[in-house]
Length: 379
Image 1 (cartoon, rainbow, N blue to C red):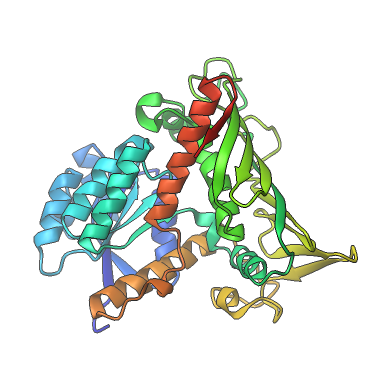
Image 2: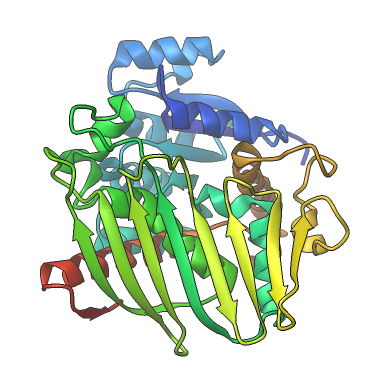
């Protein structure tokens, strides 16, 4: 392209972890430049953050609706927006930018109910706009490599998947985890779920992305364990997939000693694959002879479609920020192709709005199962 892409951000104000992470991830490849933003519901904070990030004063907006309308009309308006706000606000913000003709990247979960999620999907399709949901962990080279191995039939037919994502940061009833924890534990901002929306959707997406399996039905036990909490903080889900494979998904926020312990174990008719996101530089592949082979990122064994996202030689550790950068690498290339008129669906290598919709349907089915006394519910 003759010009560099520009983007705007909604959320990510002073002290925001996730907003800063998205900005850093995009900057890894210099694929887009921040040009506009509404960083806080407090105008003064939004303006202060915009100035600190070097934005023009007239592009530091007081609310997201004003930003969407103004940027949609500008000749040099932003190419896409990044939405990094609490869950309950995602729908209205994303809708406003889609209606303004602007591509969207939104943090997960996509919305608080499937009707909202499906409306966003339909609107993006009608407008011909790209929509990414940032399930960051699926940007890891090793996650993409597992996807390629399974697609190639390396472990045969998948029989069962054990997946988990425990954290320990909200174990203490007297500690609400600061700003990041407080909104997640608040139904008004998080929606009807906390742990399942924050962590369980990552589990569902990781399994779906790596294996290609689609959830058929679930049996869920969603607990509120830590005194004072209003929303779930521990979820155990039995899963049945289309085609007959089964699985168990577990997510928790009071597992002392666990940080971001997303782990996936995939058992097939010809082998097993093990992956742990806190050690994303390698996977373990075990074949029928029982020999366990460790395959590391940065070596020739990794498929080209996965290896192309590696930035550093083997032994120079890549992690979570690079994984998010890989999602934006694919997304911005697709945005460029859209503007050049060369876009085709096969270029997409990031979690789409469809993945976001599936995540919300999964959450709703789990809620229904739990509310009905832990029974099987179709997704």
